[in-house]
Structures are given as C-alpha cells and as structure tokens.
Length: 507
Image (cartoon, rainbow, N blue to C red):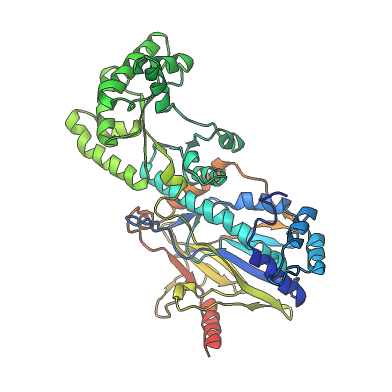
C-alpha cells in the first residue's frame, strides 16, 4: 500500500464519512474552502502577503488516489474500543466502488500568485463525503509549499537582482524536501543544489564543493591549494572555490587566486569563490578588493551560511556603507554576489506552519446553496459563509488595493460604485467610484470528473506569475519589516449575510 495514497489522511475524515454515509448525506453536494488566517510573522520581521504553491502536486495526486483492495483491508483491520470493526462493510464497499475524487470540482487561485489571509485559495465542490476526505491531503500540500514559497519570495525581494540558490535539501523534513525545493523555486530562487528534483522540474542544479574536499587533502598531507587545484583540473570551466576551511583572507583567498591564474593561462575563466562563515559583508568586500587586484573583477562571490531575507538585507546595507572605505565600488560588488540560502528558507525559519484551514461554507438544500458558518470568540475565526466569487481590485495606479469576496449570484461591476466592507468591523468601509478601479476574477477551474484541467506548468511560468503579482503590490505591503496590511473585503451583500447568520446562531 502506498503510504502517500488515499489513506494519507486523518482518521476523523473517514469516521465523519461513515456518519454521512449512515445518514444518507454522503452524496449531498457541499462546498468547502481552503484558506489561511494570518500572514507569517517571523518575530523580528513579518510577511505582508504569501505566494500560493502546492496546487500542481495536489491535482496530480487526486488523479491517482484510489480506494483499492489494500486500502480497504487496512480500514477493515481497524477496531473500535469494544473490539468490533470500526468501519461497517457496506461503508467499505461504498468507498471501494467510489474509488477516488471523480465527483469533485476544484476552483483555485493559479499557483504562483500572491495570496492574502481569509481569501479562498481553493474552492472544493462535490459530494460531501468526497469533499471531506480531501481535507488533510489538500492542506498538507498547500500549507507547506505556500509557506516555503513565501519565504523564498521574501529572500528574492531582499536579494534584488542577485542570483539566489536553494541549498536546503539536507535540512528539509524528509520527503518534504521535494515540496520545499519546488516551492523555493516558485517563490524566487533561481536554482537548487538538489540534483534529482532540479532535473524533474526541468532546471539545472547548482553547487560548488564542501569543506570536506579541503579537509581530505590536508588530512592526507596535501595543502588547501592542492585541493583547489584538483577541483579546478576536473572542472576547469565551473570552478567555484570555498575559501573558509582554514582562513578566508589569509589562506583560502590567496590560494584560490593562484589557482585562478593557472586556469586563466590555460584559457579558462574561473567562475568565483564561496564564503560560508564569518562577517560575510566585510569578507565579501575584502575578497572583491583582492580579486579585482588580481584581474578577476567578474568573479562571482557566493555567500552562504544561515542566510535569510533579513540577513541578506543587512549584508547589503553594510556593503553600501563600508565598501567605499576600502576602495570597492558597492553597487558593482552587489551585482557579483550570489546568495546560497538553505535551512532558513526550506524550514521557514521563525514561522514553521502556515495554519491554513479547510471549512464547509455551504451545502445544497432544496435545490439551493444553504450557507454554513462557524462563529468564534476570535473575530478572525468567524467564517465568511456561502458560495462565493473572489476578485482582486486594482486602483488607478494598476496596483492591487484589495481582494474582494462576493456571493456567487451577485453581480460585481466596474461601471458601478463598489463598497468594500471590513470582514469583521461594521464601522470600516470604503466606496470606490467607477473609473477608479478594475476587477480581476481570481479562482479558475482546475479539476473536474477525476481529471486535472491543465498539465503541470514549468517552474519558470509559476515564478513569472509571482514576479508579476509582487510587482503590483503596494511597496508598503512588500516591506520586509512591519508591512502595511493589505485589505481583504466583503461586498455589502456578503457582509449582511454573515451578520444575519451570526445573529441567528447567537440568539
């Protein structure tokens, strides 16, 4: 049995399914939405948005996931506290005949696009039992990849035009490394060191060498320079040398320059050096100064070692301030830097889980959608009910100014005044005049009748979506620290429905 097959779920999905089945509700049309409530807060810095990822792997999994004989036998073996079978035979027979998720239709935000709290990422419509069984697998994929893609997007924002390499496979959570690498590349990393994953995603992998190469040579009585030379002789056109095994400035750098000079005499062009420890900004300045003196002004300087968006931002700020003191042109140095980012990107350092949820928002009753709501003492957890549409609202500058949730049956038009209501505060609203805004529907149908509706898209295309969306965010929302809060709003009709349902449940 495939441990990542259709039983890659929580037990309560299957027990709820048996309740629906016993009451005859299992094929009742239902509507669920997946969304998250808060942007990541890393402590010293915060995200003003996320980047949606994980959709393509989910759709491919849904096409293949099935209740086969092995899965049914695994469920048959489960016992209740009294020792009786947990699942009845007629329920198991129904699951076997149902197979997978052929009854579901998914509408989703296209992968790679910017997302915001409370806004549906995926809308799932279909038989109540099938929709319920999808919850765990759906959240497992989109929560993790969205979290990592968001971190990578912030790293990309901090790095600017510099190349960003994902180095995190060794620190990723087991097979979660696959999703972490994929999400990092969607979010903004240019390449990954992971060989098989890069190949499967249609990208070349990148890497240099580790300290162990130098250590091995020195343990056998050779020198650091001989280790560098051996690497350069095997990879004369791809030579990047790690400088900090012994001493970055007084050992690694002069040895690397001598090897570079030998390569140049043979007609080869050294690629650059890597620094993995120490004061990376100061060391980058000194290394650039010496490489320039030696006639290698275009050699790259790869920085690695516990980097994240805030560290990169600090490195760049320090270089802008200090480089002129040493006769190094700061902008030129920044253009030759490459950032190798590992643990802090693939582990979403400082914010380990997105906390996305999957909630029932409507169920079919007497030929119409009956809205469902959940109330809470925490206002942010009060559900936005009903069958909805989602729009992105752009202002006169062409920048995104709000995401708008509307009831599916209501008409939202650009040629009429549009009132945006705060999701929980009845005193907060604003009205946009025709001609001052444009609307973009966000959710696209992606899965129907057991099949995904488009093939897996190239990473470059998903990354391009991210680039376009981030470019259309207000600069305040893009800030790495204390970002401006992006507005997520309801239409007047949806706000009124929500208020009426809350009053009904409370009284």
